[in-house]
Amino acid sequence: MSVALALAACSSPLPEPPERGAGSARDAVAALAIEPDSPAAAAPPVLRLHVSWPERAADSADEVRLFRGLLSSYHVGRIRERAAPDTLLERVVPALAWSTSGREIVVAPSLPLAPGESYTLAAPASGVIAEISISAATDAPLMARRWPPADAGAGVERAIFCGDTATPEASAVVSLDPLGLAAEVASPGGGTPLAGCLQLTAFEPAPEGALLVPPVRALGFALDPAPFAVTPLPELSPLACAIEESALGPGCALVEDDRLILRGLELPTFWILEGAPVSFSGVLEPGQRQVVRGLKPGDPLELSFTVIDPAGRSVIGTAMLSGGPPRARVVVNEVLADALGPEPAQEWVELVNDGTEAVELEGWVIEDVGGRVPLPAQLLEPGAFALLVAEGFSESSPWDAPPEPGTPLLRLPSLGKSGLANSGEPLILRAPDGAIVSRFPASPKPKPGVSVARRVPWALDDVASSFALHGGNGASPGAPNVVPDP
Image (cartoon, rainbow, N blue to C red; front, side, top):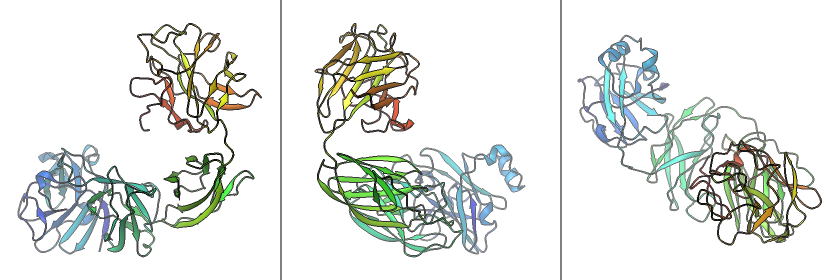
């Protein structure tokens, strides 16, 4: 069996081979069948292309390529001459191609094809083999690969695909081609950290250097077709936890009142945590910290964890944790520095108490590059918002988003030395003892009428991706932020 990285598409209809959907023949030399069974005029985005010849293959696996769009006679001629220009090579679709016999080649595109677009499958000896059009209709929901990373050499001992559709509890045995490696695809069903996901587990390790592709369909879903590249990876090295941290398998976690903060290992890892009411699954990049909420302050918790490395090797165990005492956690959550209305009067800074205990704000300080301004008295309950505004702020400004009704307005002599810089500036919130409790960055740069917002109140201060320009109508003073996905 030969394997090569190549490209594939489909072309005009070909004579129908037995037991597969067929395209139409450009000539009588090569025949095309599409997996899953579908016509060339309405092929699914995730597919494989089976090219067969009556006696033996006229082209090698690495010469059969899939191109975006249709090909001119000039391009076909250059392909036959094995002298394709760079402008044509740029249209090649990444794919894995292999021979299953002396007369059949399988081409598996490494990414979903674009709905509504046309593609051409061609090779030097055969010329145009087929042209296909990708259907805009969804034949099966796509499950994107969440683990392992597509750009990290990895095994297939355990892979995870997730989508937007519920996955009822079920399992099926599948094949990882071109080696025919047996594997299981299973859905844990709802009520778990992997609800809406499928897990693929190989029954035996794949040989080093192998390139493997998942099945095009499993349990009624289309799987992300990116291939697995099996390369050697070092074993996970456990972290040395700080005094204030707790060991969680090979990783570490800082346990606070209603949350824990995971710390990533030296390699990317996929984490699954479960222990009612805690439920989490996600990727931690090397050294990344991740907030996981759900602990009850002061209550013990038995937490089950699974840590998966890029090779699919797992560390599974349990840990006994206990949430810390209740505490206030006031953060700078949203800032409108470039108001559409009069400036600096219509600028504001939003605070939210993301903690589990109420706090009195008198004696707290908001600080920018121009100096410090003390806050007036205001009891901020858990989950409550407050707006820091200048004395001339108007709640009924017709230009900017109005505050949520009932939001306390803490009127200050000024916000910043002469208002907030339209280009953005860092802000610091200090507790009465001078300790810094929250930081807000100078970037991303604000836009007129659009605030800079923390993605969620518990997003970490020192992570750039915690902050983004507000979506929706531009701002949400006194209400949860609306931030587009990164």
